Each structure stands twice: as C-alpha cells, then as structure tokens.
Image (cartoon, rainbow over all chains, first blue to last red; front, side, top):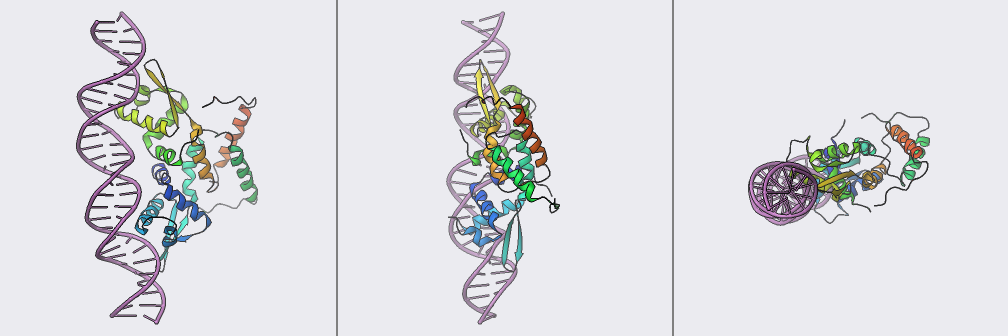
Length: 116
Length: 116
DNA sequence: TGCATATTCAACGATTTCGTTAAATATTGC
DNA sequence: GCAATATTTAACGAAATCGTTGAATATGCA
C-alpha cells in the first residue's frame, strides 16, 4: 500500500502529530494514553490520529473498547526517498551512514521485510 | 541556518511546490520561468516561492529585474534525519548509499560549500 | 521620457485546518 | 440493566491556505 506524498508530508507538518509518532516509536498505545501528555482534548488527539492513519503513518486496531495505535514507519519510505533525491545533507550524513551500516549488519541474514 | 520541521514539511506537502523544487534540481531559474509550466497565475507561483524560501528550501537573489531561484537542498537535512530516526526504508537505501559514496568521492578535495 | 518586462502586493472568496464542547456510540463488568 | 470507560461524531469558530484579479513597484532599454 502506498500513500501520497501530499498526505504524508502534510501529516508530518504538525508538531503534535510528530510527537505522537515519536511516542509510538517506543510502543503501541491506546488513544487515551496517546492523549495523556498533551494539553488538548481527547477529541483533538483522536482527529490527529485519524490524519496519521489516513497518511498510513499509523494503523489502528480495536480490541475490546480500546483502539490500539501502531506506528507504520514504512509509510515514510516514499517521502524519505523523494527527499534523498535532492542530495546528500552533508555533515550529518555521516551519522546516517553509520546508522545505515548498523542496520545492514543487524540484518545480516537478510530476512525479507514484512510485505506491504 | 536551520529551519523548523513545521515549515519544511508543510512546504513539501504541496505538489506544486515539490514540482518547483524538482525543476530547480536542474538549474537556477527566474520566477517567470518557474511559473511557465503551471496552469496558475504568476502571483500564485510567487507565493509558493515565498513559502519555499521561508522554509529555507530555496534562496532568491535579484539580479537586475530578474529574481533567480536557487535550490537549497540542505534545508531538507533535519527533516530527512528526523524521518531516518523512524527506520531504514529498506530496499532503496542501497541507492541512497551509492549516492552517498558518489558524493563523498566528488567532494574529495573537500571544497567548502558556499557559506549561507 | 516612456513603454515593456519581471515581480510583488492588496483585497477578496472558497476551502481546509485546528481546536473547542456536548452528545452519541461501543464495550466492559457488576 | 446500569454505570463507568474508551472513543468518535457533530456543530461550531478562528485562523490559515490556496487561488484569483487588478494595481503597484522596479528595472531595462530605445
């Protein structure tokens, strides 16, 4: 499944939504728990989550009365690649490079990425 | 100079603006020439360029009565790094890696980039 | 000086975005 | 069934976004 650069970049342009994505990096979370640290109504957070879901950046699965939010970083792939087409982002790409190698090594076996 | 993720992602969320950035990948351009392929008023394009400039994604320099627009891909650096923090976007990072090496080599002498 | 070219500014309207509050809808568990 | 919990929906308002048109403003050139 692929999502438009429009919706992905637009979703990422809001600081609340970026903060939510960072939180989900740690673990899946229920809507209420996502909302907790923000000084904003639950309804507002619910809408932010809907926007993230539309962009494909998260998925939501309802178990019982709780809706769990799960990060889907693959949705950033196209956007990330698009940006990479513009160049090299000089000094810090050394970090990116290290990270690159790191992941390459950790993947050693070359397990196939979960299909999307 | 660093620009906010808010403004960068927001600037990138519009297809017209992304198209403009792609055009500028080829060469610097005057405002009128940027506008030419679009089915939109010159004033509208002028505003899009202002948004790109505010985000740091382009710079504009007036020479005579012509304002030249220049791509500033470095402004994407922070945003790109932020995204990389979410993962590795597997297959295509090989391309990114090749590009990385390529630039490393082409920089061999280490010419200082024009200061900004 | 005066006209053409290059670009922006100002005012406007339609639409979207971001937040609010209050009410609706599930779902759980006694 | 009833109360508590989890989440969304609806209606609203303020502000931002995206485009338009028409008038300014600079600059180049004969």
